[in-house]
Picture 1 (tube, helix red, strand yellow):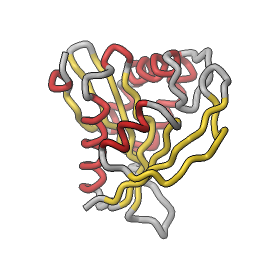
Picture 2 (spheres, rainbow, N blue to C red):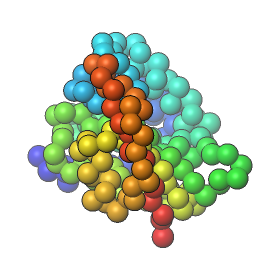
Picture 3 (cartoon, rainbow, N blue to C red):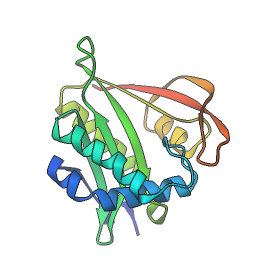
Length: 176
């Protein structure tokens, strides 16, 4: 299947709440696949659901956007744009929780989600984006390929789901 088989779209805030089981399934799959995205193994569906309930609340408050990649089998990927920033940074947003289910990897979905989140940022008047990722990961290579600029890395910043320490690389992108 190609990336074109997946529809990329922002989820309306009320739909984020309704799609929590689908979003949780992607999160659980990513953590179980070794992604360092704030959760440790074992990860229960209830823990993932709680995370997505908080995200749904932020979406309902207009603090963040949730974008998804979906096909006939359901949600295969997601990324968030955190719009709520301090008063002196109204031009900035964070990109968070880029997640692609293992069933849909290596099909260009992450690149399409990244392009869509950048488009949404522009539409919301954001000109500076910031994100972080595990140093040496496929995501780090993706961001560099897509024109994001490395800021630096912090050794031993976080834990992988199995408890091993990992470094984190920070990136920014200036939107035209």
